[in-house]
Image 1 (cartoon, helix red, strand yellow):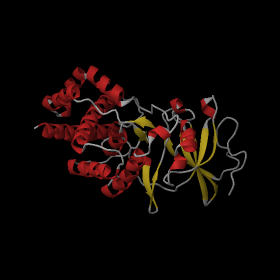
Image 2 (cartoon, rainbow, N blue to C red):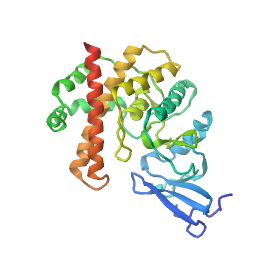
Image 3 (cartoon, rainbow, N blue to C red):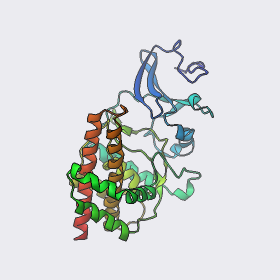
Length: 316
């Protein structure tokens, strides 16, 4: 079934006159909604307006210039509009159906195979890939955490964390020069952005794709918490995921140093996340329910404790 020419109105909204039904899937950072809409009882598509004003045109660019290199592990764009007026930016994507965003070892190992694959693409042959994504780069996160060390230390009693663990992280930051290795990253690979559809893995929402450290995607996949997608990570599972990644990625690496870097990056990223979540809890502005934020905070603290303890073990 072809899309009607007037499926989207001049104001960038869906035309109620030509669709049979619509379902809101989620609300974007700018308040606009991603929806499933039906042209018939059996034919549906996904309508995705620009949900983050800072990402204007990026997802279409990625779909046109980067994803053609990939196998069919992503939903295709059927139609789109790009305009300097943010409210007039939209995409219509193929509908993969009802998605279940589970975090378990089998699914994560399927994801890590593809992460290792796209991290192995020669970046020198990829032109004009963005250098930034949704969040600050790792270097900026490290600098931000260092300036807010005292603020973090004041939170430790409420987090039931020992100051000694945090000091280990800062001591290693001062001694270890992080690798400058850059790879193509998905950019926002949390649990809500991958799912099994039928028997096939699909990876969604590529608008934050950019060049960054390999640890960027790995942290989002393994240790990044999200208020809508709770998960549990353990030290043995984390180790198995990282070993699987290193066993499949094409670039040369020193495994011991790579593990040390990951634990350090993950620890710093988690500290940065704790400060953000704490700010959300204090604001209590209704963007995320308090209960979900507390679950996210607990998950982030658990990841920080595990990775900091791994750093202590490597040091001893």
